[in-house]
Image 1 (tube, helix red, strand yellow):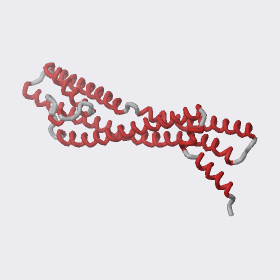
Image 2 (tube, helix red, strand yellow):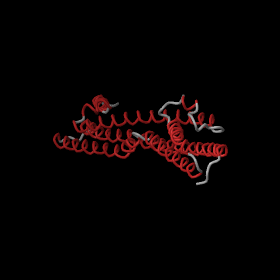
Image 3 (tube, one colour):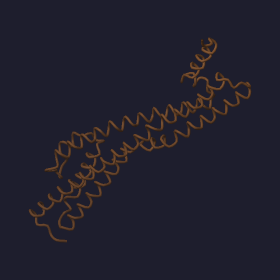
Image 4 (cartoon, helix red, strand yellow):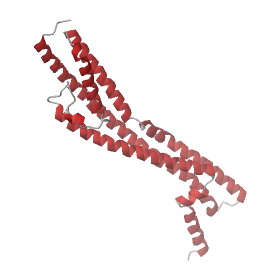
Amino acid sequence: MSDPAIGAASAAVAHALSPVELFLQADSIVKTVIVLLLLASAWGWAVIAEKLIRLTLLHRRATALIESVQSDLPVTEVAPAFLAAPASDPLAQVYKAAVEEYQRSSDLVASEGQRDALQERVHRVSVLASAAAIDQLQKRLPGLATIGAVGPFVGLFGTVWGIMNSFQGIAASNNTSLAVVAPGIAEALFATALGLVAAIPAVVFYNRISGDIGAYGKRVTAFIGVFEVELSRHLSRKGERHGLRVA
């Protein structure tokens, strides 16, 4: 038969090892580490959710936009499909910037050299708009990398500090029984566990989101190419009608 006193002691230890009890029993330094890791984890999951949802919508909208205008992309005015797109959509930003540049410079085309200069300006404006849009998509993403890199070490710091306190408590009480040792050790290891809980999803989804942004960036680059082809075709037709001079 088991000793009732041992059973009661084991139950008390198990109760003391619950996450809430571990937090309440921890000293101020370990509590600060735990709170920081919980906040970092919550912020990281918020960023992950926002990026995944936004990229899913952007990819879906990009497919619809490219398919709707790929065969006959207007270059003199913004297509209705892009007018309906949100202003924050990278494809809409790139397309509107390219059309606006064409509208500002179309009256300067009087020779083939000027036509080439117009195409070059439109290309540069498109690339700049694309870079700015992709930078916006990458906003707050470095924070995930920071959590993934620093989180385990912050948790380890809490663990080391907690174990130091545990050994000091053992030395002060001169008692190495499980009831004395377990809570302090568990409290220390709890900080490491939280560090890993914060870091692992951050690393996994940082790589996933970075890959998705890279894939979307390629679609934006392909779209710029489609626009430039349509622009070149439009300028060639315009030159044939008006007889451009060779520079």
